[in-house]
Image 1 (tube, helix red, strand yellow):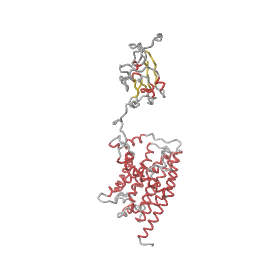
Image 2 (cartoon, rainbow over the protein chains, first blue to last red; image 1 turned 90 degrees about the horizontal axis):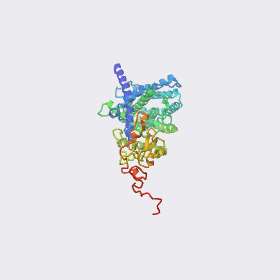
Image 3 (cartoon, each protein chain N blue to C red; image 1 turned 45 degrees about the horizontal axis):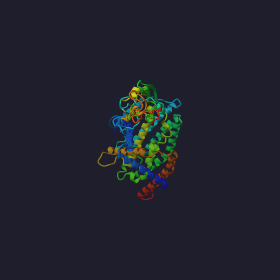
Image 4 (cartoon, rainbow over the protein chains, first blue to last red; image 1 turned 135 degrees about the horizontal axis):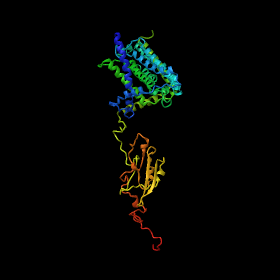
Length: 320
Length: 178
């Protein structure tokens, strides 16, 4: 791709991702409604989709208030970090062959780094708010990150071993025979859970936990700053779904339909699955989350890693 | 370990069940377009009914005001020239009313009744204070044939003692005859 094309693609990607995140707020509420035998928002426009615009208008019109006790610069900058980090994460997602902003040979590591950076947003937002609930939310988020980051990375190492590369297009190409979802079921399972925890989605939304912490780390936020946090959360959800598609569900690979359609179709199914999780699964207690992470998920990941390594070694013709 | 697998199974079953709800009907009643059925006994807006002859049933006995747990009823009694009792004013503050129906239960003349109407929103709170003319309706409400003055022993113009339904003639206490 020449430079102009790349710039155009980036602009389209940023616009598309933000737009999709906005539409997703509506879509998620509709799906939750269907699964909970309700209707969900259905008043404005066809199926209530204009609600997205109404929501945006409302958020734009809100008083942009900064609490006098807050740490002002950090308070203002914290919500941007999550959006920037998640947006950067999209740079390495291969939507189709040659349709990727940058094909890094360490693409997977870049993705992991960016999702880790996003946690700073929550952490600093909670800290800068100078509010006990926000602080508790930030604290939880930090602990959650420490325990889930470890096996999030490790769970992907099996995929890397089988593909022999950190580059995401290469990983997709390596699945032309068999998806890694079939050869790496444990890796997929662990990555889904870690991804949920990473994007603070509902079963693991302990940093927000509106029943215990009012709204957790964004208690003091309102208007567009709050919208940035929500945008970041939905971008995170989409990024994780894109990564699951890329790493485990064969990315753009598929018969008949063009590659990009396959990619979005698979991503859509994964997003639906995440919304289903939100509709069905209650939030665990804080200590349950931690003990699940360290006592169950980490061992599973290590076993998976060991088995994958052994099989890879055996297939390549025994010990080197 | 076994407990963990069991909890995992339970979560998967939950997800399956919730997924099954994709195909169940929604319970939502789309209210302004689609009105739910309200039984005649539904406790909504309070009315003051009239008897079959078109006279006010309320005798302003104050029992409803006494029964009211939130004290939202205020009234004062007056006596007509024909001997009937009536309310000089009758005021219900619907911003306090909790639609409990105690007043209806307390009413000895079936005058005060609750109706299946709950759509009484107002932009001003004072508009929720209903006076007697707002409360009065022309019909007899839920009790079509009941007429308090016909069954009670109270003497009014055109009905002397002993002329009410099932009422015996007054006993002449000065007579020795049975």
